[in-house]
Length: 591
Image (cartoon, rainbow, N blue to C red; front, side):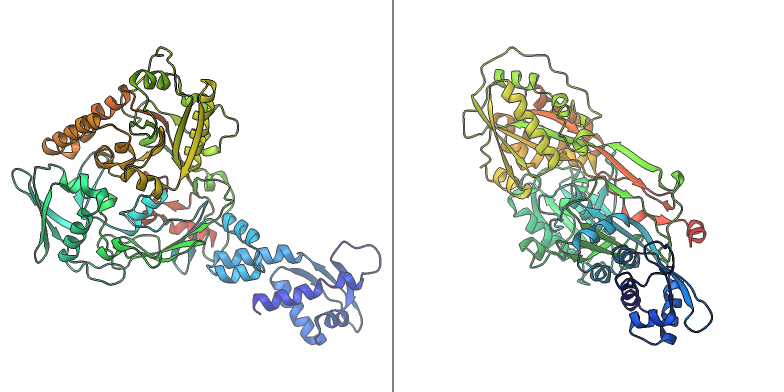
């Protein structure tokens, strides 16, 4: 008997209460002593079929029926669920089986109940031998396009959906991806990359050297890539090679193109999308992207080791209880749940992110920029610790760690209290729509008010903020933004100083000229393994001159159940979907 049909019969049985067919003596709610003929009457069927229905519903655990032998004998019937609870139970089972639309229908389209069940069932499930991950997230995702300004979670998804020619790790070591080998000439002005054979995009479109060359030429024409690719004079391709001719030496060009901005995609995607489903070449392909959910499926034609997870579904829910990613509800095949013990649910990874939220004084604001003495005084009195004293902070903001430099591993810069100077009566702050950044802006506004400075906060989308900065139209006095470090730490820091539109728009011409000189020297003389050491003094100089003020490092936390293996937190707080798997012995024990 199908669920809907069984539920239809059960809800008819619930009408027994309205008919007041109660037993002799006192009985609990939904407990009855009545003849089978009375049940058949409520079900609008024969007594024979009524007996079959009661047996079927009892097998499901929905009721307890104790029949009495003999005509007109009163049987004992107990109904265990009210209709709402039963629909939620069925909806949960359908979600665990991956039948989301059926579950939504089972709940009569109740979005709130559906959202609650999605959160309760978040985690992993094994169905027909395949591992499925289901998560909830507090907002819809932007299109997953590597060349666009992206927030933290979208940057993580780029790494799941796309691949680059190379990869670069935390130490600056460069390893193969789509290119299995590469060479450079003696002065690092020519780089040749050898592509793997038979590469394809998710759509089946061939990924050839010509495809890669066309993509890089298109990227070079975009203003936001100009600082990084200005030295590229030509991009040529052969049978299985792509060759970059550079106008000046670049010892780390192989590391630069490991950045997610250089993920390989059809160059037609740079012209815009008619829909959100993108065409990548990574371990997962996007099969659905809507305001309600994002669905990923393992790419069977991936060039590297295939993903251990088969599908990922991320639901957008406005009322998620936490912004942290949790895999705390592991499910075995058949939808049963392991026992709720500390061992099952106690695993947690926590790390302090590289990168930070920072405050930048805009040397190109529409009003008169603050002078050196004003910047020094302001930066000596503004404090991230005072921001944390706000009782209305979100949990994510409250878990942030005050920053003393751009990276937590760099030398801590402690400022002395500068002499008090006169500040402007009014200042403006530009931010993008991220809750922790908004918390920071409101905290800074409150501190400025104590100094007699009125403050206005202007909130933009991330893309609008970057667009205004790229065009030199970011006119606010202060910008609060985020420096996000990806999985290629040295390149992330290099790129931020070299080409970040928000950072560079806030610096005046002399500082930019000095910064570009430093970046060029590092690019021409240093390997990626030395980037972090060389860039620390460059970035720290901006702090010492009171150009920018680090505010917070984010505390990243990931939780999961012990039946999961291979779980590790990435630089973006998410688990790497490619490496998650379940222990077969645990599956057997909980089936």
